[in-house]
Structure formats: C-alpha cells, structure tokens
Length: 199
Image (cartoon, rainbow, N blue to C red):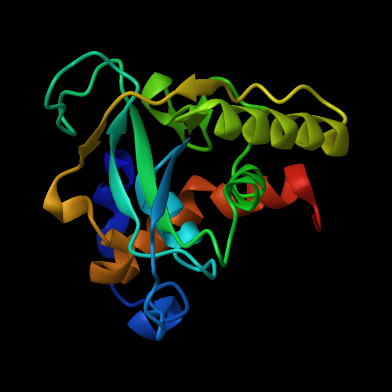
C-alpha cells in the first residue's frame, strides 16, 4: 500500500465529498453475537466493503494465519492482512458473509490482490468450526461454478486474531481522500468487475 502514498500529493485537490459514500456510518446498532475472519488483500478495503453490509458491526483490521506473536504492520511475516467481521446472525448468516466476501475479491489470484503482492495480501476464509467450514466450502464451490474457473482462495482453520495498529482502524473514514486514491490506483474495483461482472 505504501508505494502509492508518494503520489498522494497530486490528489490533494480531490474533495472529501467524493468519498462520502465510503465514510457513511450505520444508523442502527448491531447486536453482533458472532464474528468471522477474512483475508482479502488490503484490510482497509475489506473493512470498507463489509461495513456496507446490513447486520455487520464495526469491522476490525488485523493479522492472522501466521506463527509470529504480536505481529505489526512492519513485521507480520507469515500472517495475512485480515478483517474480523462482527455480525448479527439473525440479520446475516455466515454463509452470506462468505458469499459476499468472494464477490468483493479476485479469488482466482494466488499471488496477492490487485496491486498488493505477496502472501500477506492473499485471500483466505478462516473457519472456526465444522459448520463454518462446510458453509465456506459450499460458497467456494459455488463461486468456482459461477466463474468457470478454480477458486484458489484457501479455507484456513482460525487460530488467533491480532489487532492492527490504531492508525489502520477505520482508515477509509479517517483518511477518505488517501483511501479513495489508493483503492482507485490499485485497480481493485476494476478487477472485481472484470472477474465477477454483474454478479
């Protein structure tokens, strides 16, 4: 993500109003009694995408999947950038979350996501139990059928989630111009549209 920040000055003229749709807050409180963890490349973008979904609470950016204790943004080798998605199962199911996740990433890319390359930016669905595994597998298989190609996103048993640094949390709300420029420059939405079309 950092490689785009040197060019941010060129976008200083962009009005914050252009980012209003990403920074909108939910008006209804969420009774989040469950949570799910996903890796979809840049955790800023995953946080923004999931917080648009009914039944989802305040999404948290973090790291998961590696062995290193207390990972940081500068040193999280073995971990992926992930989000923890708190949700109300009476409003949205785990399976619906997984379906939504797949349609907001490029699940055909095993080398990273969009402009962010390397293991830390690869996709993954983390499951906590057999029920979640079955739901995630069914969603993955459906995605493969719809795309007519193998979905390479692995299903990974969840072990531990580590919060990312405070400056990463709600980045798209706190830094809307920089976030919008990064997302556009990285080509995320263009690639998702190319992969999924109008799904």
